[in-house]
Image (tube, rainbow, N blue to C red; front, side, top):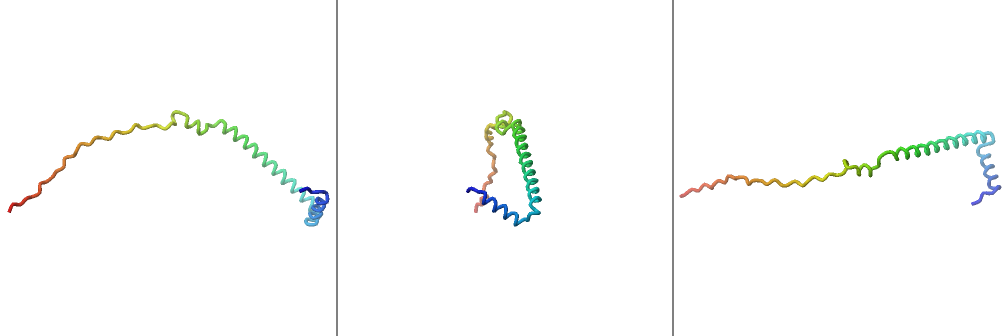
Length: 99
């Protein structure tokens, strides 16, 4: 889609009709300010990203954390079952009545 000089002229004419000739300089100024603010915010975001990547390079990673010996999982030796002594149970003889 190519925009030629005729299409640009029509777009400018429509803008002049919509906003009026008096408001166009003010509109252009506000668009310029907005562009400046937008560019400065983008630059700040890039600077923050560069700073955070430098800081993250000095911090240990998760892999470094788990590779250190004190953070390795420890195996607990299996517990031997305690041999239980059979408990003496008191059995009572049924009462027998002789008749």
